[in-house]
Length: 227
Image (cartoon, rainbow, N blue to C red; front, side, top):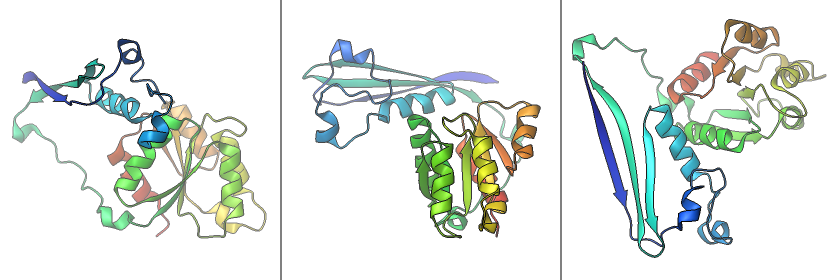
């Protein structure tokens, strides 16, 4: 098997960045100019998300920049050249059109994780409503009429109500029989067998380990939709 490194280098002639800011460019909500978020209509999560994706692929990203002289971004990814006959047949991907218009309630307190999940879901036409914690997830579900959401993605470790507590509250909502039937999928960094069992015992339908992988998320959503 042959291993090799692929390097991508992208340069611009923009406003550039100071050496001090470069140390924090991959931090969440990081923007150099105080008014940048208003001027550029950005959240300050773009580079943090980019680094997360590159890291998930086993690569690295670096930046060189100078004020007034532009920036150069370098991404290096380790690849393997393998025999095509050795590639295993993969599960048939879900037809993305089947998920267009699906409505999901996403309960996630971490802004970066939520932004990544929402980008991935919207790419396949899924409509996402975010709750910032378990308590808001319960309120959003209860305050909307039956049928508003097709499925809930529920983080486990959240303030006010964790994922287990929020799931129990939704399942027990008086006058809302849909609370007992709506698919709820756990999302957690804990991926041991006992963690999966805890999710199922709490009334959830499935379990996704973080960091989430888009194809796995899409397949899990498709398998659990009440259709």
